[in-house]
Length: 309
Length: 261
Ligand SMILES: Nc1ncnc2c1ncn2[C@@H]1O[C@H](COP(=O)(O)OP(=O)(O)OP(=O)(O)O)[C@@H](O)[C@H]1O
Ligand SMILES: [Mg+2]
Ligand SMILES: [Zn+2]
Image: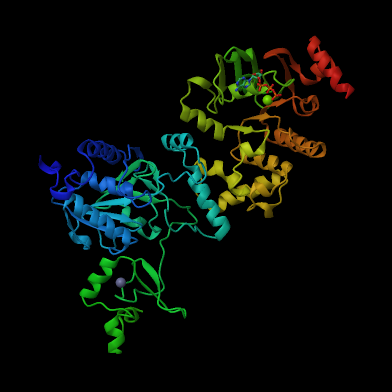
C-alpha cells in the first residue's frame, strides 16, 4: 500500500497525510498544470480540512498532496515557527503523515508559509508552499470574476498600474507594502499572497519550487524554479523594497525583514528578525545585537550593528 | 474631402437583433465617414441602444455585418476579429460615452487615474507623463487641474460626464459612440456639455455616432441623422434636411411635435 498505508491506532481512519489518494491526485494535476503555466491560477476542488478557512487550508492541501514519508517539514507564520498557526499545522502533519519536522530552513524539504519567505536562500529541491487568502490581484478594482479571467487571458493588465498610480497620487510613492503584484515569466500578473514586498526579489529566479494554495477561493498557482518574477512599477517610480534604520536587536542582522516588538508600556520597543530560525542561527554562530540578553548583562563591547555603522 | 475620406470608416449592412421573438432592430444599413457625426434618433423603445450596442460590439447581432476601417486602412468585419483585437480596438481607436457616467467611469479611483487608465492599458509606464496627459485632458473638458486627485463621486453630474469624455479621448480615438450623452443632465448643464462636445469633435476631427431622443441635440451635433421607429430606419439624410424638410410621415410628426414644445 506504500505511502497510502493507513496509519495504525487512533489514526486508522486517516489516509497518509489526511487527504484520500483520489483527492491528492486531483490536486497534483492542478499543481502540474500550475507549474506548466507559471503564475496562472488553476481552479481545483478544494476540500474541507479539519481547520477553518483562513487558517491555511489551501496551503495544507498542497502540502498534503506533495508530502511523502521521507520529507522534512517546516511551517512558518509571519516568519516564526512558534506561533499557534505554525505549531498546529506542523503538529497536524506529524500526526497524519508522521513526517520529520524542523525549524531549520536548510534542513526542510517542504516549507509551508504564511506571509514570509525565509531569509536564507532556498535551494534546489526545496518546495515553498504559500497559504493564500485572495489569489486574484485584479479583484480590488474589478470584482467580476468573468471579467478578471478575461483580463488575464488577454493580458489586459492596465488596471494593476491604475492601482499603483493611485498610490503615488495619494502618498507620493507606491505605498503598497505587501501583496505587491508581480509579473511572472513575462506573462501572468500574480498576487504573491500577503508577503511583504521585501520578499518579492526572493521569488525571482529562485532555485526552489514555489506553490500557492488558496483554499476558500479554490485556486492553485506556481512559480517553477529559475522563473523570472518582476515587481510592477513605473519608470519614474521604480520598485523598492523596505529598508530598516537599525539592525536586529537580538542578532545584529542587517538587510533582513524586521518585526517591531513592544517591550513595555512606556514606549520601549525593539526591532527583531521576523525569521526566527535565521535569528537563532545567527545567535548560535555568535552574532549579537543591541539587546541580546548576554550583551545586556555583559554591558561591554560594541554590538555588531553599531560596529557596522 | 480627401480621397481617403471617401472610404467609410464604419459600414453597417443588414443588421438585425432580436430578443427572442421581440425585435430590437431590423435590417439596418448605413455608413459613417471619417470626421462625420451621425445621430440616431427615435422614440423610446425604437431600437437606438440596441443598434448602438451591436455596432460597437457590445451586443452580438442576430444577423448582418459591421465592418470598420482600421488605422492601417484595411476594413475588417468586427465580428470576425478575435476578442483580443476587438477589445484593443475598443480601448484605443474607439470611445464609448454612457448615459450614466457611473457605467463608464471607475467611481472609486481618482479623476487622474480614470483618464490615465487607457494610457496604462496600452503600456505607458511613466507616472509623470501619465499625470501631465491627464491634466491636459481635464483642462480640455473644463475640469480644474486641482481636481485631478478627487474621485468622480465628488463630482457633479455634468463634471462626471465631462470626465467620462476625457477618459475616452485620451488615446486619440477616431470613432466615439455616445448613448444619450446629455441624458440625465439639466438644461443649462446640457447646453454647456453640447458646446464642449461640438468643439472637441470639430477640433479632433472625430467621427461619432450619437444616440438621442432629443432632436435639438441631433441638430447641434450631427451632420447626418437616421430616424428609427419599431426597430427600423424610417428616414435618413443630412440633419438640416431631415429636420427642415422631413419626408417620412413619422419624422414629420416627430419634428412638428417637438417644435410645439
Ligand atoms: N435585454 C433585452 N431583452 C428583451 N428585450 C429588450 C432588451 N433590450 C431591449 N429590448 C427591447 O428591444 C426594443 C428596443 O430597445 P432599445 O433599448 O434598443 O430602445 P431605445 O431606442 O434605446 O429606447 P430608449 O430611448 O428608451 O433608451 C424594445 O422593444 C425593448 O423592449
Ligand atoms: Mg436607449
Ligand atoms: Zn535577528
